[in-house]
Image (tube, rainbow, N blue to C red; front, side, top):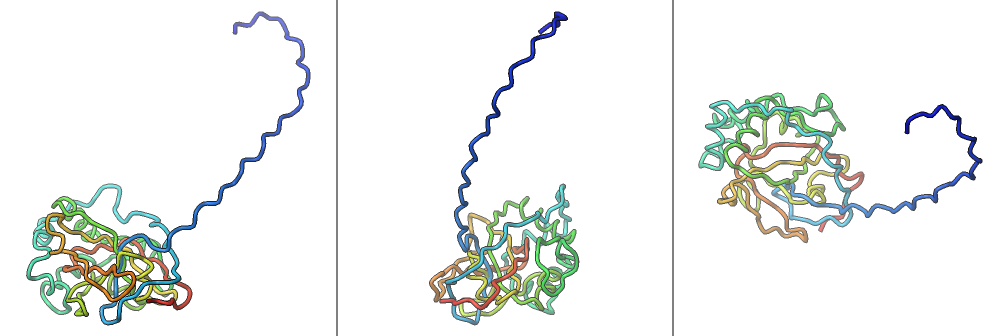
Length: 244
């Protein structure tokens, strides 16, 4: 309102109004497991009766601008799932050397991979390029998990996954649930959260469900280490789990 120069009379003091406290509603407990994972091939499959849910991924491994894939990496991506996929997951082969060169330099975002270190994964430049190429070549992805041991974590992050000959074939064993993956890690050991890539029109060529003698029955076999991108390293349960 425009000023008239008049001074308004003082207002009478009003009693203070204290709002009623807002009731606090407890959040529902998180389910123990919700997404896919890795499995040790030689042990009977299991379901977890008491499991710790993983914390949500803290940071993305991709930079603000995706690293453009090189011609060599695009060529490799076009070969993913082919007859050389086992060689790419086998130590000492020429095809394996190409995979190791891609993941070399991958580390935890918090720094070096040390005993008891967990958190988001910082991909090497070439691994970022591989991730970008997979997406540009029409691959979809799903989240799976892989339980492992601390001593093996640097080998996986810096060299990519190796294939394993297990009860259900040769490949990289993963599980759909974090809870089940804990059975293959152990107290305070690492469980890797993974992006696993596949072509929707031919899913089983890249990643397929295999029947597993466990209540969970959520084991997936990945054919090629080029298809597996580590996203986060979670800490497993504080004590041994009863797995069925």
